[in-house]
View 1 (cartoon, rainbow, N blue to C red):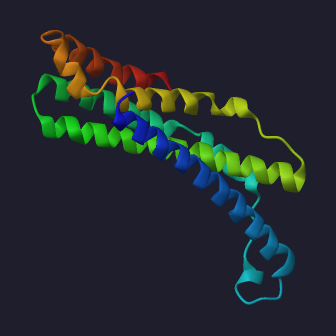
View 2: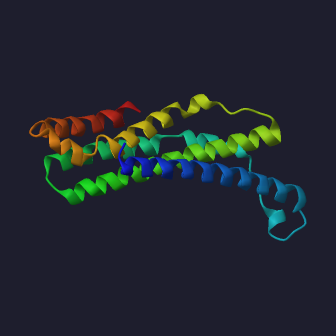
View 3: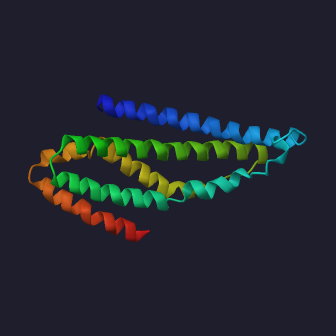
Length: 175
């Protein structure tokens, strides 16, 4: 593994842990405000927020499908062109999306910890399957299948570029 991949893995682990702890703390703090802050100004007027209501928002991947389809088309177009700047832009974008998806996993984990501790209930992990596939895909595009790496395939890069351009609308229509 390259140092770049190892650094990305470190960032993903830290992001997951920070978001999980922050989410659990957020919900515990909200529960504390709800229980003991009823007479305080502003805090007493806060509406009740149920942590399980966050789960459908976390696992709704429609936004990610649009980003993924656009990323595939952009990668194909960049492969047809020749620009180190465009390669770097797509690499940074793929890493950013990978970190954002990891943060969603951390938020889900923090919600799960809160639900287990405070309510003794479970959350369905099956709802994370599609999000997991997206995480793997963007991680691969951030490490192994970078556009800069695909340029080394010579004239085959044009076929790969056209294939990525065609895959974008297929991905978009499949969800």
